[in-house]
Image 1: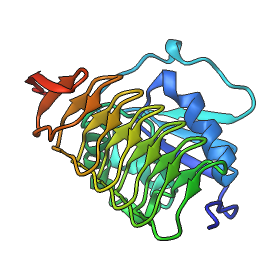
Image 2: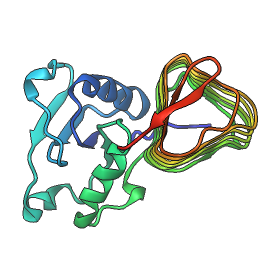
Image 3: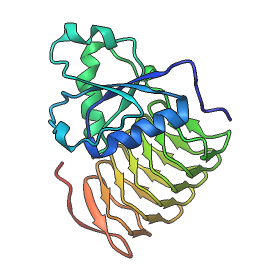
Length: 229
């Protein structure tokens, strides 16, 4: 399966999370050959440029687009999400929808070291870091982040805006709800359902279903409180 699209070399990043920006630019280059990045900052969450460590390998330009007329030059761009927090990607997309951008303008950024079955159904705006695997008949929704060394089993459904942190192992027939965050090193048993807007803490072993709007962790993983985000 070919993941690389070398026809576009410029990527517009929506939202600014300084600690992640260099990782995203490296993924954009490794997957699709992007070397120039426009970063649109204003999303209702203000981050300090002083927290960004400059990467001189890439051409990076920061913009504040408060007025619609200033967005005109970006409307036909290819976009990527620059944020990963729970509900952050959906908030960013909803903000920029007023400029008539479409999901089809979000290319998938998939590291060439990943192994993805030909039968996997990929939406748009997906970011998959190095050494991940996704097996047969899984479905990956819009704006999903899958970080390095994670494995997703067959017939899994990963819904829109989910973030899966490094080293997660998701067994077969698992469904993860929209806007949920899976922590580093989490293991999820077969046929488990995890609801929307839920956080699963790092290192958890999920052996039972977890409802929406929960903060859950532990071995075995249990709900500790309501997620009010």
